[in-house]
Amino acid sequence: MMSPRSITFQIQTGRLKCCLILCGFLISSLVRGQGEVRELNTEEIAVLFADVVDRAEVIDAVGVQAETLWYASGHFETRWWSSNREGRVTGRWMARDSKRCVLISEPVPASAPGWRCGKILRESGGVYRSLNPDDSTHGLHQLSALPAELKPSLP
Figure 1 (cartoon, rainbow, N blue to C red):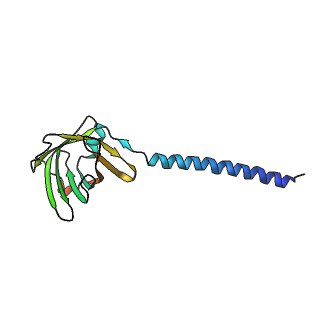
Figure 2 (figure 1 turned 135 degrees about the vertical axis):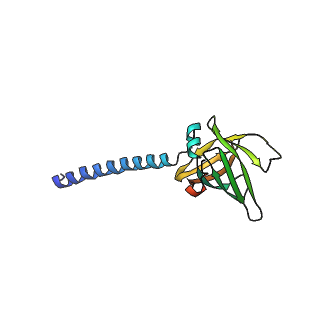
Figure 3 (figure 1 turned 90 degrees about the vertical axis):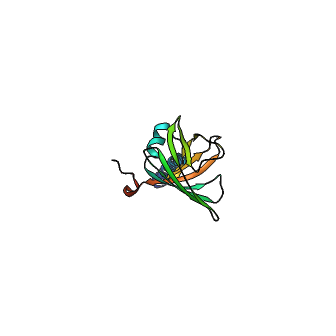
């Protein structure tokens, strides 16, 4: 026959096990939720890229890094570099049909002239993934507010 003390101990141990199992499910649900990738809509893209500095690792051009200034006015300026090359690109941008669209002005592109649109995905840790029109990955981006001294002054 078990003593009342050991019965109480078994009940408390059982309750503790249930609590630990429930906590484990809760924590794993939270962690899974943080790792979800979500496609941004048109309005989110327009707000997200208005007056920001974008530091990117260009995935479809191995070894290339870039810094882009995205202006709320719809213009952008990019400085890119790799171990043996560097360059600058300017143009216009807009959000349309749940995609970020860019039109390169300088240098004039030899291939794929005109607007190019791709989806923007929000990943965990404040990272954004931009996709090419064919849905392949273009780059991984970290955004920060555009410093006041870099914002164009209005007349």
